[in-house]
Image 1 (cartoon, rainbow, N blue to C red):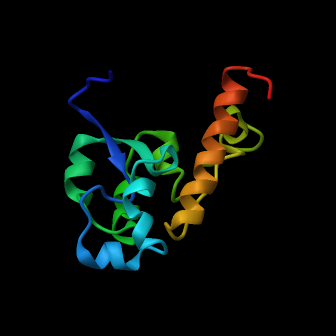
Image 2: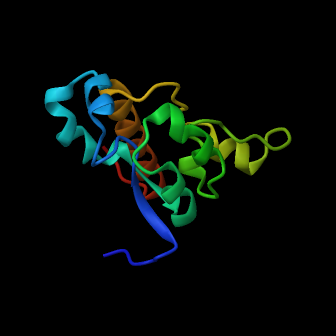
Image 3: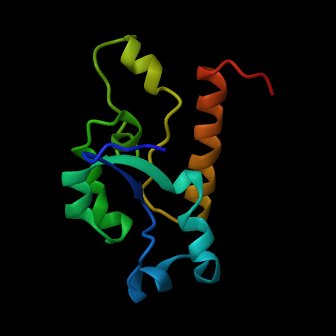
Length: 124
């Protein structure tokens, strides 16, 4: 298990949604299962997580930009430093999301699987 009180596992699609958030999700009947998918999870500093709370994605995005976790920050913005730098190469395959629906969660989940395979050098 992961125990670091300064870092939370953030559910981008909230585990405890408001009625408005649940209704706005493109597959409201499947809301709970999408909330638990790997593609819906990210690491987030406790202080930021308490401020974004159970808001909808549009309202959480500014908080994600302040995260020190590259995978979290890159949900909204792809960091760039210089030309052909190690950071730029590292973030090349990261996808940014304007919206947060079932398709976005599935796409991010596939991205995370691709990254894990590359990092851990796992053949398909």
